[in-house]
Length: 390
Image (tube, rainbow, N blue to C red; front, side, top):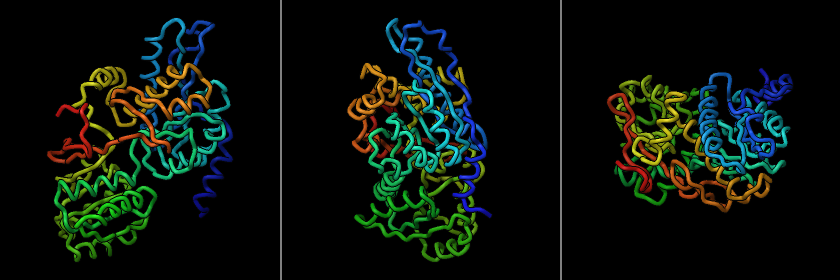
């Protein structure tokens, strides 16, 4: 069987045309002939098993674009959105990044969903100096490139792991923690963040790494049981790590679970059923139902598109920020917009956003939820959020 790298190259080679999917509902002809039209491009999966994520992201951006057009004055920019399908494939993502920039009117990028897809596309965006906002991916390496055109809304996976350890120490009173992580980028990064924090506490932790094929699961569960933790920290992709929870419970281990945002999924938790009862889950997604600043947006979005997802929410916020940057800078010149994003503060439905020198959001928070009575219930945030009324 060919390696993953070879399979990516082959897939990209046979997919030689742009997978352009949709554009803003407002046609260019609807703008006055003198209007400066700005294009926001979304690159995300719009086919395959992750297509709903990309659709939701695009819908969130579309809502922000349409609102900006509805409110525009006679001399304001006109806004359009275009979407390109990266199929959740890193090779195709890199190719679609190139196609997205064929149009010189492309002013901003929002994407991608996957960390590896984003990583392979970033050099393309950097070479063309086009600002990109990464809406949800926490992969820490994405903002460690030194690129000045890359901005991210959610905390990194390392920061999430550190926040989870802080929560375990200060809120759960844990003393003996089993760190069970998937040996991939996300699982290892969040696990390392957790371990880094415990080094300065009285907590004792022990690692139980799982290979990506989970061939070591049985042996690691047995070792975990013998170690007798009072908390089990789970880090990795939820759709893959879900098999770990029943295995641990079947072994007779009753210690509570604390898990990363890979498990922040109603459908996944319902699949786990009683095995997930009482699980605490961290996420970069705030409880918008308790945020008056988001009420109007949530209502409008749901009336138009249906259920609001985290991808819809952060797509909308990313577009709000990009629209705000263009208005503040009074230009569509990409290098000037990179500068505007790096120094500005932008009002969104989730409050003000500004960015650190590396492009990560300043003061990005982590939120904690508990799964009980077959539903995720908001508990608290790592740091106080004055916009949450709870």
